[in-house]
Length: 206
Image (tube, helix red, strand yellow):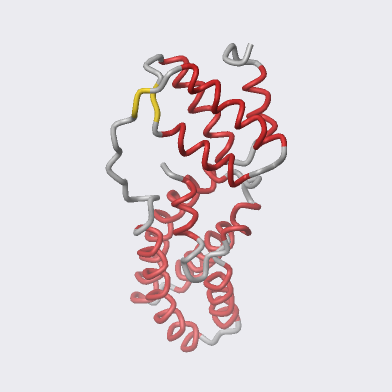
């Protein structure tokens, strides 16, 4: 998955604070992407549970489902919706069932729209992968030297560009391809120290 493209999509979703969500998983972009994918499925289940409880006026289940929705939203950084559900929950706890019901009916539509926005991203869609271009070991050595410079200086623009360039290549050797994939994963998560360690421990620049 092209994490750079995914995050370019995520930051455009109304109500999603990507950096807040990342802070809950140690700023690991791949882990956060996995968490969002899991969250989306759970959100749809929890939203259905809220709607069903409202329809049958099962207030005990409604309170539990509403609280679960609020926690899930806060956990991924969807603060605006989490705040809305918190206010709805507060109204319910004060005994203002009519207000809670009315506002939750509107909020359910917002939750479905939010879920739909997530499902339109690369979390759930896949681009057609182009065949990877065969590359040589001298080419890899050249790119690793460039990566050493980029990661040593914290140049994320160059590091990201080099990672994407390597993603389009194959070296027709399973171990070498796995090494490059590991380097790319480190770059995607801004783990430049690990990139430098991996390069230093490889046979390619000896």
